[in-house]
Length: 232
Picture 1 (cartoon, rainbow, N blue to C red):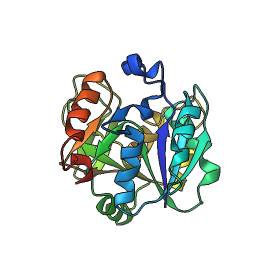
Picture 2 (cartoon, one colour):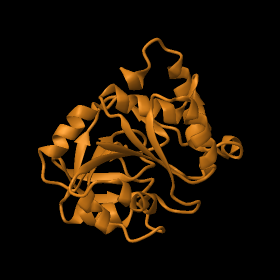
Picture 3 (cartoon, rainbow, N blue to C red):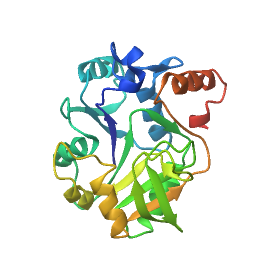
């Protein structure tokens, strides 16, 4: 199964670092956050990675050349392409009538990926999103049981479950992405929520994104622990 990691954004909210390097190369402990994300998937036996590059993507590709044991395809998906558009550009690298995994290149979690995949396979949905409960400043999910009935993007007044990344998606979902300017979190996911084909895998364990320097500092404090929370 292919694992897609979106790693092409500008990372403007942590620009004190991303002026020099792309956000996925910011180090958490000894390794870039992108490396940590890859290790999360490898822990559960997922080994085929596609990294969607954009801003300073050549630096990401150059950094990972030393890891000969990692099976990664680095694909340039454009400098200004939005999240949905990046996924759409990878369509030719995916097998029709199959599922694939997708996550963002700036968040880590100890979500059980085997259970996530089993949950997705046991339900007739186009997309399963990992739902988490940190501060309400991300894409908010309105749930009814395990079904997502509404998907809203970054409303500060929202509370409760939010989009934590770590998706499982059907190849057939790609038809809802129209072009480079499509945000994954807007029309495509909102549409599949309306037709009741978007499910939520509720994760109550560790999850943390790296949206700001404060987030980065928190992750670095955790990275010095003997047992790193996202790899437990």
